[in-house]
Image (cartoon, rainbow, N blue to C red):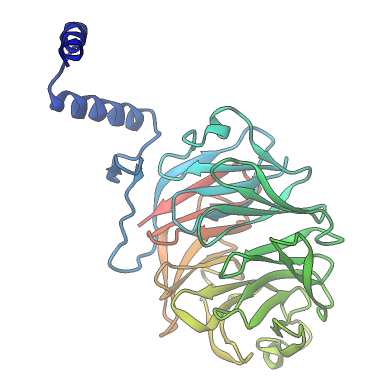
Length: 377
């Protein structure tokens, strides 16, 4: 014991001490430095314990209308797909050169908190990335390429978790995880919808019936049904177990006659297990039920929209955000059908797609431009 006390006394002379408040001061300086360099937003509290910005859920849905940040790609490069992670921590982009990058959407900067991105060891496919989706637990991100390949990546490490080298014979147009994150649903330009098993690494189910490229595919909330849209203008509901087509509907077929516009997007509505948002190349948005019936058709004014190019659903599932061919963002009440427009235009021409943050009133947009503007309410 005497020996231990003697060693402790000797060490004490070599150790400098500082008040506990000094640590808090240093942490404060560190956060301020990161804010000044665009790595953290000054408007969102930072959680020191978890090492990330706190998620603040707004009390109600509001239409994003002002610029929060802009993600900029190198010259001659542009995004082909975007997606927010389910936990709201990242905005992912898939680019024409095959790179999948995760961004701090508050600052518009690449998230270098992920070591592999800081080291330049990026996630990359060997063709343009046409679609992206995160798993519900936020641990995985799935990418579909123009050459028909699908790959699933580990978000934290950037390593490949599973590869489907022959997922489709043509480009992959959409991907989505099952509710339990054990399967990946995909649609392709080969007119086929498929389910792939993450454990087996094999195709599990195949849904055939569309006569043109598939443009969107989602699971029903209970995973008993798969819904898909296609350039053949139809919305199909499939039995996820037998792969049989339960029903097929062409919205407003009687109204359009032979000039029926193709359906380009289908989106699940949070908190509503029975209805989905369908957009066609027209000024009309449809609310389609799981039985294939069209519950509501909502049409925009011709002064602001000839056709909707991209749509997404707000976090609480009460509204649809839709960008028209005039770059005007429309805010659509799903229940009443009322439409509002924002004063500011999306600063892109010919918007290709968009994504809504899962909890915040934030949306991101992309086109063939090298910029990805991120808007907030």
